[in-house]
Image 1 (tube, rainbow, N blue to C red):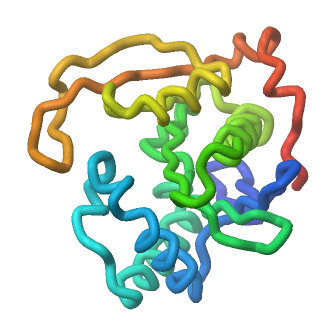
Image 2: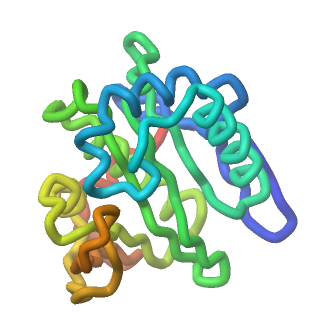
Length: 202
């Protein structure tokens, strides 16, 4: 568990029913690269970093730099593994952090062969619980391209409320102007959110 004078303790790993979710580490590049290569066609329309297949060295550099960002609380990237065989199944994390609120934005992507099994819904529920229960979050957001229906469906299944559609607020990886959906969950929403009854196992 990493600690800081400025920010609350942030566990570097936790578990849900089927998943181990942890901070990146040196040596994770191979697992990440394999998953990105498998999923590149599905990732390319939504993720700016997926415009080209990364090299193994690039994936390892990302893992090492992300581990440092996590340690310094600049960002909280997380890797998602299936506990049954420790297969790396996707990436998530808490980004665009405002520690003075505190507010977090959850991002995520899932390995192509792992879709349709509820893994990312489980991961997002676990990360959301961590944000509210361990990091004292007041607000947690999820943002996605309005055309990314699968990503939006995860947010809705996790009990997030669609607050806004930001029209033509950014450009998609293909250069087209896109609308962004903003989903949010507030601390006061937890009383009616059954998903928060399942605590992450620290």
